[in-house]
Amino acid sequence: MSPDTKIRMYVLCALFVAFTAVCEQILIPIQPVPIVLGTIPIFMAGVVLGPKYGTISMLVYILLGAVGVPVFAMARGGLAILAGPTGGFILAWPFTAACIGGLTRHFGYSTKAIILSMLSGNILCYIFGVVWFLFLTQTHVWAALTACVFPFLLGDALKIIAATFLSKRCRRLLQ
Image 1 (spheres, rainbow, N blue to C red):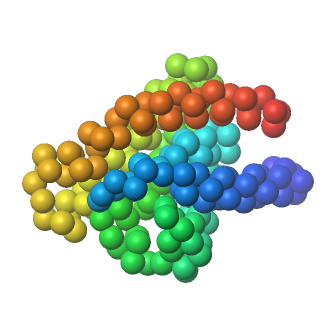
Image 2 (image 1 turned 135 degrees about the horizontal axis):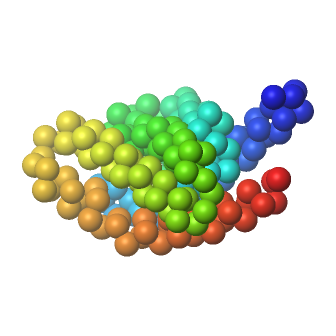
């Protein structure tokens, strides 16, 4: 990879960090896990940046939030957010971007492949988040699914559709 290409990828990573921070502020504050638009840039990072740079962008986002920059939902930051009940979802984002990026790189960039890759990444995110939530709250699995998954299924399906459309558009613009 040429130095110019690396610089371009790092700039795109920074843009996805900023995009994620902005989308995290667009939310419906239900408890214990708010509904946010923040998963759209995570899904897109995997497709547009690929597994390596999509992961880097989400790691930078998490590190910014961990040191106190208010990039998490409701303009919060700090380790307490990562250690709280929603922390597992946030910590899953680099893995989610890597999963989506790896699957789309392997299976191609057709609409069907992107949607299935994003669906797989979303399931991975749910697994991380629910396991973390179960560990911290000591609730039953059904209660955790009711709090952390079921209210989000329709919205996540719509976000996957939107992210697919936007990812395809971004890939065309960046080539």
